[in-house]
Length: 191
Ligand code: ADP
Image (cartoon, rainbow, N blue to C red; front, side, top):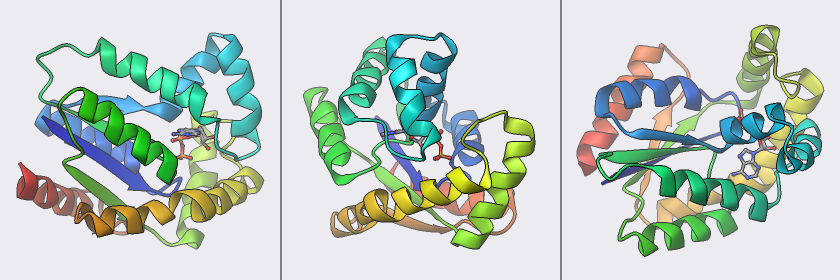
């Protein structure tokens, strides 16, 4: 199976590029952000807890996110050609959990697509997205906190995957199609 991790800061284009990868490769999409927002919408206990963290720009505790991830993974049909992990892992601990969950299923991470975008551009994109997304975390103050969280907790994962030879660095500023064609080349290299 093709197990793709799409990696990058908030606003780096993970969702946009995931849609293109899914359209081309037919892989299943697992977005922990979407899954958490769904729990918030349904007003579940988990959703209520998650909301507080999300609105502060912090990570939701592992046990909540991992539970959601496991149930989504288990619900996938046998016929899917692969999975794209969007928003997970977000720290080294989660990366280790993902490796373990995949190993239990006889799988491993195939490649990590790292979308690299500078912070000033990220804040601009998030504020712009906030005008239409309806997401309560898409405002300047929360965006800055999310970026701080990203640099402190998520960015160390870049080195973690570089050391494993799995990190494909993608310049994330430019046209959507150019970025996608770089991503496609990285996927073809591991297919
Ligand atoms: P973005 O990457 O643009 O910040 P996401 O939709 O991936 O947006 O995530 C939104 C929020 O959901 C994050 O700021 C975080 O609070 C929470 N979240 C999503 N995925 C995880 C995860 N793997 N671990 C902890 N919290 C998460």
